[in-house]
Image: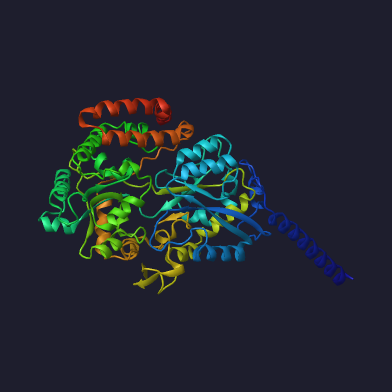
Length: 549
């Protein structure tokens, strides 16, 4: 009887355990519009919340992907080899169906505004505009991700690691509201913080007997020589010594910013930076005045104000008529848009190289570096599958998943040199629309080799050009680099004004650069006053108060 009783009790306990387990699995299998726990969740409740390991019943999500509008054999960013690979793997491992939604990289704020306003934004959104996030956060348009960090995002948390800019905080919590504990967006991790590069036609310099410029004056004189002597033989009326787009603050950044007072305090620089524009920093106006001088002497592309994206400027560079430009630190050497590759196809002896000429009054070629926190991703409050969106992001954070997306197949998109991947040109269906597929691996910008001591080698190998081009460009971009200023406060003022300030800022720069020299001050001052009255002053006032906090 005793043995039977013991056996009965064992069976009874097993039945109870199985039933309890089934109940828990049933709980975990559902998807929800709302967080499974409020920000005040107890430890016991958090333990019971859905975990990344649980595979829920079938659900669907939509995911934003940037459409960069680049050429060179590009594929549909929403339907190609890599999107299909993601869809198959995520369906198999998470039981989630993924649909990609294209948003123009160059009109992301406008397009996201429209999607958010209509309640049709993708479940996973990404943007470089902190002000857009702040605006929709304040409007109640974003899902609070804080309850999910430890339950659904363990791999993302581990991958992002500690925040180097905020002591004692993990990077995943960079954007947390320290008063409420709410978290409405999470940053990607930049492996490489190099930002700006200046590029010049070295073959033209060689024909003219000129060295690589090391000062602003030498750079200017090189442009004058390009214009007057036409070393490329393209015709003096066709030479474009310097090209840029309507985004002057970016495409002429290191030149203009070299005029800023190098002794400017951290506080004054941060407080007076409005939607990433430095218009109000001491010396910036003089940098724009220098551009105005260049424009009126015929050294700048006279159609730049009509270029709302890079396409026309890129085509001029590739055709062989451009002498110099400023862009991302490695733009000249990327497969897309393929400046150097296509330039050489048109002008076989052409050579486009990086240089670092713009010295400030302290004698340094100071230039901004990217913050380690890159593009931000978020989930709209309108999402019908918050948990599915976060499971997807966590899945991308696993090394084996994002690493494959970054390097592709050996022998097709990369080869291994000393165990480090070297990117090779891909053709056909496996071409990547962006370097290392950064538009799909949204939580990382820069190749992940897991060993940062090998990063420099990996960086140089990850291009299809001579590694020395990359090494030089990277060293120039990092030389006298100015780290990003991070002030961990919550800002709201810019949100409603962001697009207006961007648009008016572009107009300000176009009108100032193209003004007659004698009218420059009047044009600049009039536009600045309008810009301040259009919301910039409100942004400055808030930042000044928050900095004191």
